[in-house]
Image (cartoon, rainbow, N blue to C red; front, top):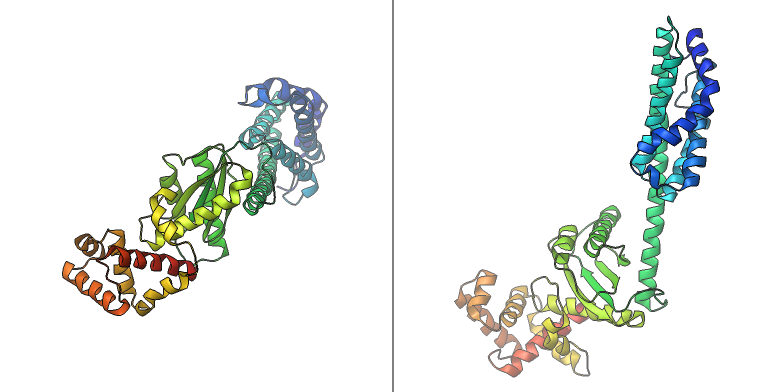
Length: 389
């Protein structure tokens, strides 16, 4: 339908003088029943929304009185409502409330047209009903798109602000004004995966959402495809549900460590300690965390570099190219040199474990049955993992 009949134009023209009255009725009575409307600021309710309602009513009735139907290409007619949608999104007005004002307003206009229709104008009323439904659909589509675009832009800006804050605190270049001490520093390490930029961004968003959910607040975090750090002021421990929720978001291979910074100035050191805790736990074959320093206290100490680090790490050079022997050594030490536990984890017969351990001793000269050589082997594993990273 490209144009309206003379009868439909006449009906629309008779309703146009009622625009101000209808707009006031919408905003002062009809909209009051909408959930959340009463909590809006007075100036928004009585001025801005009233003006938008008045604009919508007048635009439809004048267009219809002129015999035209609002077309999808009539961008100038929609631009005003799109701008208001941007504004409402920026103010935090819920989308469902915003759209409810449009649908309720259309119902009020339909009632006004029905009341103004005279006998014999049923066909004209039907024409205007169809035009109103079509115009309403286009306006709601444009408003929704603009609102969501603005929300996405706001979310992106807020997310970048959080990432910038986390980056500055982790680098020690910014103070955390208004933050509550201490600060829980969570290091996350994702399982290695082959993925492109889109997959990495999705992973980071999932984990960020999980962090916000776990701690009940917007958590500053700096994440990439390998992992990253999250900073939570005023906390010293992970919530009980944190590991399960974060692992669901990041995948079963997630490792995480929690350290505590007494204040913002200590965040960089706490972050480095968290990275080291995860590295040491991985090198020792510990099950995925959460990990704490006390869990790997001896191993952490043994992994610190010194003048002898290179010589200790070189003790396991003869095992290069033999991942089966390295895995056996790591598992055997993790299981406190219990050959049966090692065999069960590796899916081997205990005699096969004995054979591999004997081969390790033959190649390296380390007797794993002695405390000194077992400690040297553990230190060599840890220092070797540091060099690999």
